[in-house]
Image 1 (cartoon, rainbow over the protein chains, first blue to last red):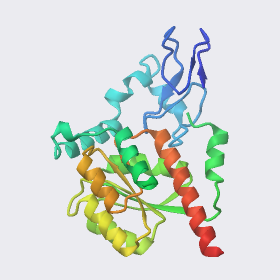
Image 2: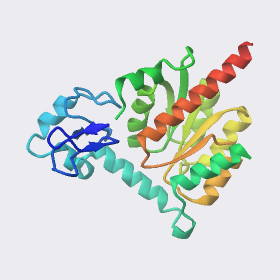
Image 3: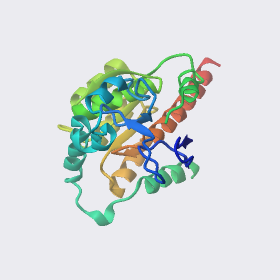
Image 4: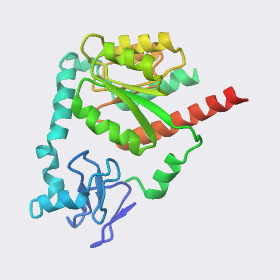
Length: 109
Length: 147
């Protein structure tokens, strides 16, 4: 549970900003994209040093710009889009929830 | 957010023996992102490969406990690789990690024996839950084989 230090709003999962008062609540790791707490020193997923990352982009809101500027994340999105280009039939697309259901149902059956 | 105590619980899981993983994806960026993530969740990533032939060779050589496998790969599709792996080891745990959200691929993967099918860009917490599930399954299998 994440709690906004300014207005007290609570959120079940990590997020960059408070949806009620705009206070910053987290910092996104520029290596793997995980949102960490503001006082974390290392990323909770890839263990990259967060202080260095914050130092680079103070005043530019590292978290906000991550999705448009991270080389790694761009690469991953591009790779996913290339893969998707093989399967263009949108009508046949299913969600992760549908997939989980298929796997669950088969396990139960 | 992965809390420290939660992470420790995952790492100190039900089994003492390390769980080894093989990562097969043609995208270096994906491998660079997923490998440390799996390591953080207590898996030991023992190998990576960017195409099917290398992937199958690595599987035979390394005999990992779990394989994370992309579908769109050069030389062989992920589903062909999955079938190849399951021929080598019918009990192999293979997790499809792909951006292909087609029902046909999901059903074919399931039929070929995939353990799970995760869509990219993936939800970290989902991977965490899945790894916990895999650890439990392996712990039970290891206990059975020791009994």
